Amino acid sequence: MEARASIIHVLHWAAMGLETIGVVVIVFGAIAATLFFFREGLPGQWEAAFRGYRANLGRGILLGLEFLVAADIIGTVAITPTFESLGVLATIIAIRTVLSVALEVEIEGHWPWRRHDSEKYGSPKFD
Image (cartoon, rainbow, N blue to C red; front, side):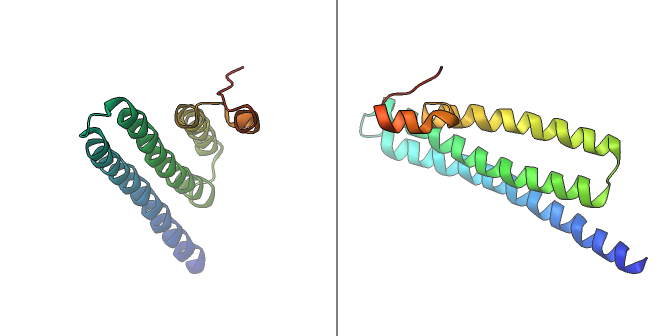
């Protein structure tokens, strides 16, 4: 039983570490996107700089969300595997998946499953 407690302790720290990394990635992604925005926007090309800002900010959020989902999976499945915690995990992952898809559409300008059409025809496809 002592080995199981040690493993759970390590998994708990791993989940906390991944959560911390996820938050740090989002914060630093926001800071970096803002710095790039001001650097690119100063010469007077604010519209292009704004599009780049949104894309860079979205990329930072997407990457951070991936770490947060990994932390949730470890924390729920490995540490406290109850039906209630699995239901909460499923809800969290569903919400984060919707956010991820919405952010990807915002960044790429097309649905993820239409990437090939966009490359082939050169225009966004939202149908």
